[in-house]
Image (cartoon, rainbow, N blue to C red; front, side, top):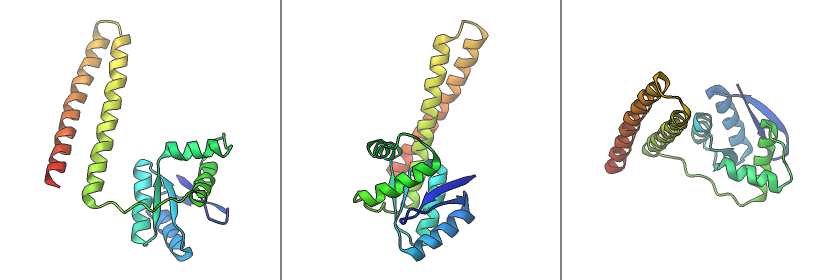
Length: 168
């Protein structure tokens, strides 16, 4: 896949998603002396952040909801990757955004555990809704089995979270 970006001069660009694309982007951003503004968006954002940190480029991680609210407040109602990139560039220019400190290995591990906990919780919520709507019988039994597995997975993740917090 591709990642859209917008340079401070308004020039749009598309780079290959992944280490090669992010590495080249980070090197050019470092040479240009810019601060990157990106949305916090899972593994894609993390890989880009890692490339920026390795290249010594400051970056600001923006909450996607805040970026969307800024776009709406600016009169941008449409949503595409290219418009999102331009919006992040404008947001970084208009607001006094402070660079995000690079996360340590422990913080990254904790962030991954929290993200996984949220994923499992979302799956549980969806299965509970399905159970509420399911007829009795095999379908409900199947949903209950999935819920039991999710409950066990959630307990494991929460235990790992507690261990990580206690160890820090």
